[in-house]
Image 1 (tube, rainbow over the protein chains, first blue to last red):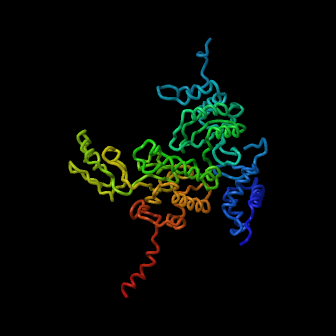
Image 2: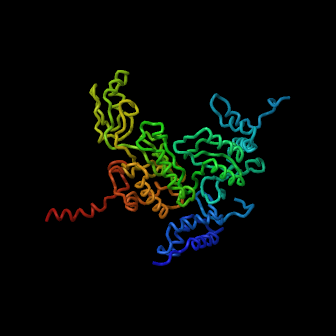
Image 3: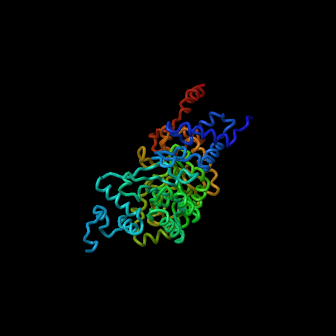
Length: 83
Length: 406
């Protein structure tokens, strides 16, 4: 069985994806999970690992949840940003 | 000259103070004597009444660290006129099961909200949470810290599991067919991650009613309704029935003839119930509570798919599991919910509730995906159900016919 991807690697990959999508597309948590499972493959990456990675991103403050009719994952706003 | 001769700043709102009934305007005005936020709230509201336009922007980037729910961002679009309500965020606080509080707990909530917010509350919101109305972004983390110190946590908002709610259940009601309070506490703890970190296409609500009277209206409001029921016979006390007749109840007219499935008969001395036809409407039990009680083999019916009209129209729940024993640790229900959430998260469209998802993919496909067998109770109306297709029977028919012929 292939080595499972670490939570740190997953968090980093998710963070990069959110950063690249900033200003282009709002990503939902399921978009990130699906993308990670596709990128790393289901044998290396589980839904539970994605959940934990996302949780770490949020707890660290590197990403935040936003709400625009639905919930999205985004980078925290810079001070003074208009909503 | 006294203030009474000055023209009112809020003539339209003042109309809503007239009459003997409680008035939200009166309450906001009382709060306004101490709270600048409440004062400006009156101003925004009066402006809205004058212009017939709402002055709030909703959503955005507010919350407490790590959580994706519990804070609803609200901003005024006229901050220059009413700077004290430029931010007016709502906090949803997870209520205790059945809404039981010590007065001390309520005082703690009120005190902290006067320190951190407008001092205005709404007990309770339609999902069931304690609603704290109006605070600024920079107050959120400290409010959350004080709330947790007082033993409370934020509830759900956004695309997550919303704060589960239930009726008062066995704490105050003799009809509870399972312990709604324990169940609600248990699932609230079990689904903490799903409650605080939105990961679904849209919101998902649990509501638990102890009996078919359905005092929390789960059947109309919850994505997953857990409604207490029984599967044996209604318990009858014939002697107590006699007392009802002596006290003027016409059992034939008031009870038997109002039974929707006509499963009862009364010969003037004895009541007979054909329980296999009973649809658990509770009418007879509500009419004669001393004489009739739910059966002894109790549990819950699990229904899925109701919602209020937001993106699309309102929907009522449909039966998913006709009877489930409801005993801790509720493993059967949790496993079923896990499968539903997995499937809907994977295949649901953005802002599609689980009921709408089932309509789109078909109940047959949904049941197959979550591993449930179709049952007659899932059919809403005989010969009218659009969801269950018995394709395999049609395919097997020619073979079965040839075997008979052979």
